[in-house]
Length: 199
Image (cartoon, rainbow, N blue to C red):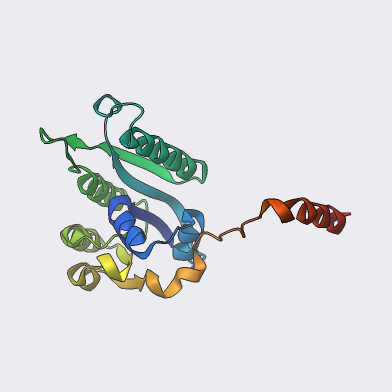
C-alpha cells in the first residue's frame, strides 16, 4: 500500500550485538529502503548510547572508540536517519551501563502512534521488553513489524508483532559492498585503465 505511512525504529545496541557476532557491515540506507518496501517513509530513527566525553580519558582505545562512534552517528544523520542518543552511566567499577535507550524508543513509538504520525512501525530489535509497547501501539490501531537477526531475536516480541522479518535471509539487500583491495603494484595501471574507459 503506497499511502501506508511507515516509521522505522532502530534499537542500535541490539542491532550492534547481532552484526558484531555475524561480523558484517550494514549499509543503513539500504536497510531502511529494504524495510520501507515502497511505502511512504515518514522517518527512520536510530537509538544509541554514548559515554560522556568527560568520563573518557583522551588518547586511549576508549577515546578512539568514542570518536569512531561519533563519526558513525554523524554519517547516519547525513543519510537522513534521525539519531537519538542517551548517555551511558559509568559505574564505580569503571564499567558502563545502558539505561535509557529502550525507554526513549518505546516512548517515541507510543507518542507518535497517539499523534497518528504513522500507520506502521517497523521495529528493528530483538528485545522482548518491547512486547508491551507493541501491544499498546496495536491497541491504538497501528501495525507493528519486527525485523531482527536470528542471533538476537525474541520469540515473545515476534509473536506480539503483526509481521516478522528475519534479516539473516536478506543480507544481500543491505550489506556494505566491499571494494576490492588495490595493491601498490597494480594501482597505477588500474587507474590508467579506468581513465581510458571513461574517455
